[in-house]
Image 1 (tube, one colour):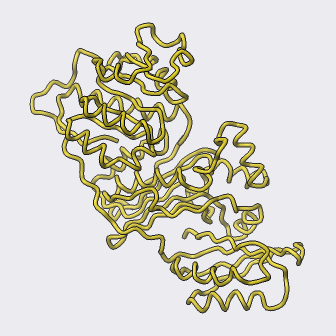
Image 2 (spheres, rainbow, N blue to C red):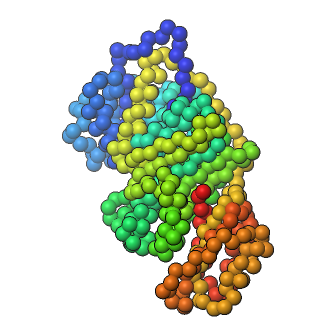
Image 3 (tube, helix red, strand yellow):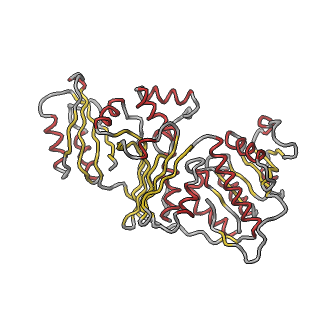
Length: 433
């Protein structure tokens, strides 16, 4: 993903001098990028500097002897480095360091999704003002070239919806729950021991990580200024094994789904667990894989899938952006001003079918009370499912609803929450068509 370029007429396509690269951050992804750069046969990309705090702890003997290690970011700015690769993560100091790099007329490649979700338009404008390249293809879906596909491969279409599995940690947990029949807490603990989940999994489990990625996708696809905090997020933490049992009854499974839909000048943006029909490509995504499905007015659906996490897949995306940066530098291209993202209305209120799971102390009149609360908001029940052999003292059952606006469902659930037969709050999930 990069600023659009146009070649200067008559410019040379190649330069004898290699593109000099500095890494800012030498963690899992940074070390993978260094290995990949050193394994490439052609000399067009040359690693010359590595910047990191506590550099003595980071030095490794497999990095080429000519590479300069430093704890001073200013050493990168004062050098002849062409591209700085920001792999530190977080908003600060990454934001200020990237700004300084672009202002110093250094191109930048970053894998920092939070940075680009929060400050993307500002940094793209700054790159354009200084005729520099800003690549961020590694920010979404790891090694899957979805951002480049949206910008270039689907540029001729009018995109109306993006839907996908953007967080490999959640997908690993949910598929483990389904296949091994283990509870959420156990699947999470397994994922943490295996290194698939962070010690603090909040951003993943509660949808914040996916929301940042969705904001970037929506900006590229729809040219709208969508902030991560405008994306409605719901946690997967309330999903139980009973929900997978009922999902199977409905020929479906459960996945954390990210959706951005452009309609009538408004963006619907949502991240959370959803029932996915078994014949959907999204239902077949297992482990830490990612899949993004775009819908276009003319081209229909296009899918981008593959490894969405890990040092090596992300490093592939970073180096792919570096190849583009080298082409920008060597071709004598000038950067076209980036399209300014347009303000937009954002909503979580869209009509869709829903799955409602209740756990109750069984007694006469429960179903009547629930259906009355729903009907007062104009919500029609589609089906009621109750599996046998559960105790009446804690009876789980499911009501599926015909498509209804989200605001009507929220109002009904607010009334239902006061019913004294509920043992826990109802679980609500949209049902994909």
